[in-house]
Image (tube, rainbow, N blue to C red; front, top):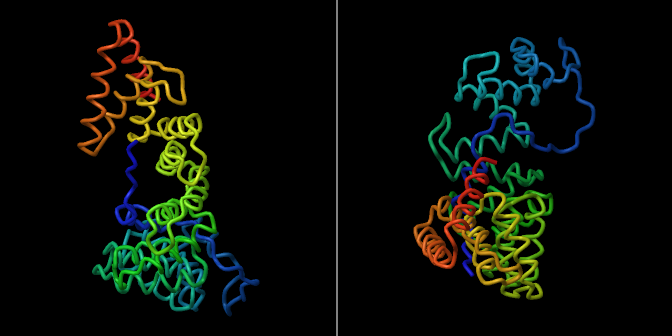
Length: 316
C-alpha cells in the first residue's frame, strides 16, 4: 500500500497564512476596565460597525483589544483603506501588552513577509509569546518552525512538544502532525498505537490525510489490528473528500476484493479519480496503469458506467 504523508513543513504557510479575522481563543479575562473618556463598549462591536473613530480613540488610550481590532480593520480594509504596515503597528501595540492573537498575527506576518520584511527569527519569537499563553495556532506554528529549523534551531523534540500542546486543544493539523511524528519516531519513540490515536482524532475532524493514514495502519496492522474492512472504510471517507492516495488504495481493494466485495466498475471509477487528482507523478502513473489493467477485465458497458460515476463524483 502507498503511504505518502503530507509534508509538515509544506503545509505551514497554508495554516498560518495571514488571517486578520482569525477567531483565536484568548486567555480568560475579567471585566475590561473602562478607560477615562470612553464607554465600556466592546471593541469587537465597534469593529463590526466599522466604527474607526471609536476604535482609534480606544486604541490610542491603550486598550489592547481595541488596538488589535483596529489592526484587523487595516488588515482587512474594513472601514479604512487596506494598509498592512498600519495593521502591524496596531498589532504590535496590542502584542506588547500581551494580546495573544495580535502576537500570533505578528508571527504570521513576519513568517510570510506581509507588511514587513520576512524574518523567521522574529516570527518564531512572536509565535512563542502567543504559544506560551495557550494559543493552539501559535503552538502548532512554532512546532512547524522547529521541524524545519526556521527561525530556531531544528529540534524534533521541541516540535513534538509544541504539536502535543496544540493537539490536546483539538488543533487538527497538530493532531495530524503528531500522528506522523509517532509513525516516524522523530522527537519521540516510534509508537504506531499512539500515532493511530492522533490520526483518529484528526480523522474525526474530517482531515483526509489522517483518514488515509489511519486506513494504511489498519491495512498493515501497525498499532491497530489488521482489519481490511476498517481500512477500506477509512479509505472511502478520505476518497469522498478527494484524497488521491486513498482513491488509489480503495481501487486496489475493490480490484482484489480485499475488505470489500470485488467490483471492477467501482475500482475503475476510483482509479480514474485518483489519476485525475494526483499531483505526484508516480501516483498518477500507477493509477493510470491500474485503471488500464482493470479495464482489460471489463466490458464496454461497464467502462462507460464507471466513467459516468466518475463524472458524477466530480460534479458533487
